[in-house]
Length: 357
Image (cartoon, rainbow, N blue to C red; front, side):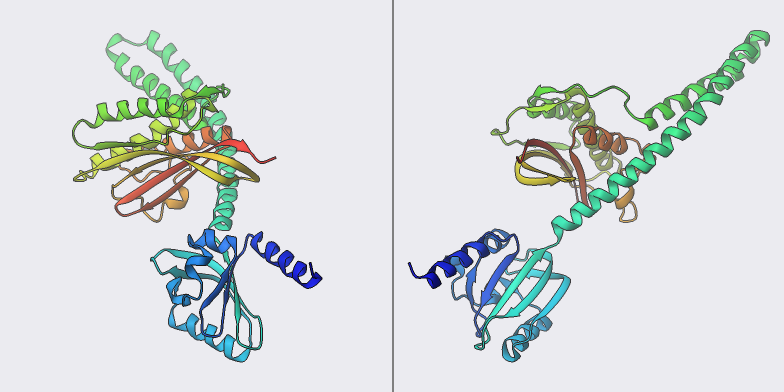
């Protein structure tokens, strides 16, 4: 085999193994080639898009179209950072786009690097850091609060023995309020029990959540189950996962009922996700549990803070459910994310199944 042909094949193989999407255009802005990353990103095949105009793949805004034509005509490369591109099917992507001239005929190579994964990892790292700082602050504060609370409660009990029974209602108030504050502090600190993992069927846990939510919702909210039957058993703490799903599901139910949403529904969905990164670990397979509702959504001002203790968007909420859920998910080396807009709120809970070697 001639060395030139070998080199060309090696180059083609290398381009196909790049994680950056590569789209090769001729001077007429027709697609000449796509690498595997581009096929996966745009969900098309090279054969399908061969010599199709770029507009059949991307809806180019006038400025970007002008930049591509100028680059092809004058053999000038350019790079645009963190821009929005739209596929012909309407799906929008945040990307870094680099355009390089390939030859004197005006052919172009488009390097497209999606930013969703980078942004998600950055946000995950920021949330983890903030959550750890918040947890440390709450634990220190809880210690400082519980000590005087114990003293107040004890003093009220001693005082009650000396007072006329007609005045006991006042000491009872002091004791009950001290107990209420102690319980609140305990909930702020979060679960103290060590995680006890064993092989569990995630769908059995979700069926229990479904039954509990149906009992509370009655005929006001519709519950939908959409399970992936191929999911294997997971190594998890069933009680803690029940608490996580119940906290998220009840938030959805209460939001629908408080706003009296007509045709309200909650969906419990499971799927397997391939090559999913949590923290610094890439997992070959992860289980994604999605709990979504068609309620009013979460206030934009609170989206970044909903996992902090005492932060809530509901009038009757305590702001502890999601904080506890995140803490339990982190104990399972998992991830919880929220995507919310008017008419659609979805919490995605990712639990690792297998790690890459």
